[in-house]
Image 1 (tube, rainbow, N blue to C red):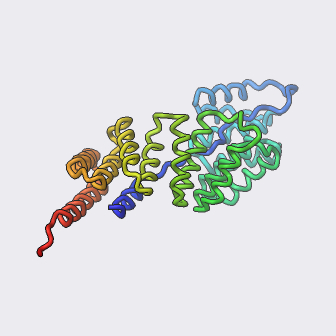
Image 2: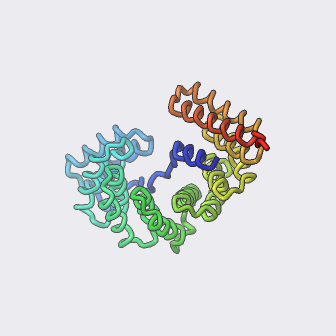
Length: 308
């Protein structure tokens, strides 16, 4: 049955956290002249009216106001929110030409390059942050996500550890700490270090007891260690939190089969099959049918009595 688990684990997409980067850039001097357009742009950013914010910051840039560096940086942020990644990259580069010490511009440029799959440039941007502020956990975490994308999970782990171990760890926001533990757990999972993955997913669940994805991934790790009782409990918790989490029914069915609860296994497979049908998910439906056929073959062969 374990090979079936592998197939369905591949079917489920591991969800990594978004990069920490999105922050306003403020003017560096209080002596700079007040700009109504700049203030309005910041207001629109706070209101999540990103297209309007871009218009206001463009006015500041066109007028060559003294706030032009911050206007470029904040327009970069607005473009990022709209997924205009090439425009965001260009704006952050303009901001950095004017002010090479703009930490937020480096962070936001790193995200733009990450989305554009310019991974070397993304890592370089985060390294510039670390050079200027070695305790900025965001840069370490973001580098970890880039290395995870590149498949270098050991290096990703080192970055996640640095993010958690900075001397300014007390400043780590609750939600950010949760994300770092989660992605560190995923890296351990990719390295097949299942006990460490479980420990990190448990940290996530202490911080956020309703994280269904953490329960699911921890259930998978327990499954790989053949701790079927714990895996069954975690998949059940996923279903309690989200009854439409279809893949959890499949894995709970597999675990039930491993525990000898054949009827419960069938029940879970049927629920998954019905949900995939309702979702019009033909790939999931066909995979589940294939799983059911294999399960029937396995249970039939186990139940056959040898001829003496």
